[in-house]
Image 1 (cartoon, one colour):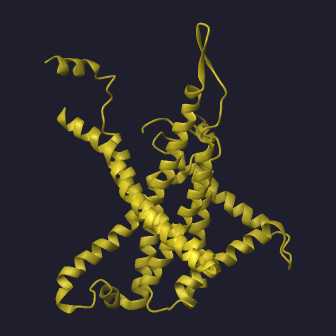
Image 2 (cartoon, rainbow over the protein chains, first blue to last red; image 1 turned 45 degrees about the vertical axis):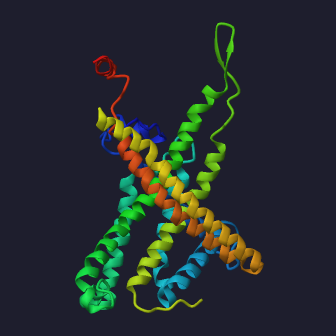
Image 3 (spheres, chains in turn orange, purple; image 1 turned 30 degrees about the horizontal axis):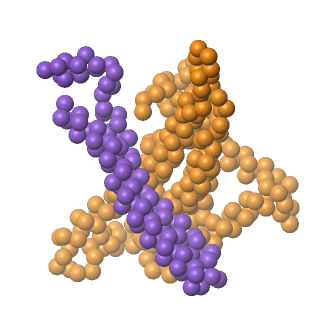
Length: 248
Length: 92
């Protein structure tokens, strides 16, 4: 899987920018995703109307949906976490969909990007666990309820907690990377599939886009994986925040 | 050489066996979701959301095997470049 990726950002590797070779194209693309979301949000709200229309309506709809989701999973403390969860959802969604545009690569197809996001979730969940329950209460979470099984249960829970960011990262990375690989293979396959013998040599036949169904599936998968990441982050938060019962 | 044989088989069969288990699980999930919708059509929205999320979780287990296959694929040597060693081994 070690091949050069050709994106619109290849000019950064040459002078005058001379970005070093070990910087993957995922980094400028991730920054682009960030800027896209920021500028779209800013300019959507510029003529701020009472009755929302157009982009403002779309953004308000998304925020309302996120609000409902946070309230459903985290109870009354939900809306406090909407910026956190909403950022994850929008950022991962835009990054996943970016790979489907020719000349772009999904930054989430790089394990480092997904691992970075998962580590942030992990750190925030631990911090809130300690802040809500105190250090002893937080450790109490790992002990379970049967006191004489604690030496057995404690390591199991700790390992389970440590695998959560790993599974978060691998789920997102595997889905996006797998989709992109299949699209790449199918796109490379279509000239071979439709070449036919013409006189002395071969001629490329109709360039039928056989990768199109996979691209449509990848749109769906990218959205679902962004949602799953956000839901899991919210569920982990709800797990350490005590007893805020859901309102549904 | 046996190590490379094992590696190649693992890369090939790993995802296939993981997909076997994953597809069985997903089939059961979809079956019960469809049955639930048939029983109570007004809950279709909730059930559809739950179904999609559940399928994503089951699929992620197959994806773990795919990630491992990616990792192992990088460790397989290039057969065309090593054709001399290959011919020498087969002729022995």
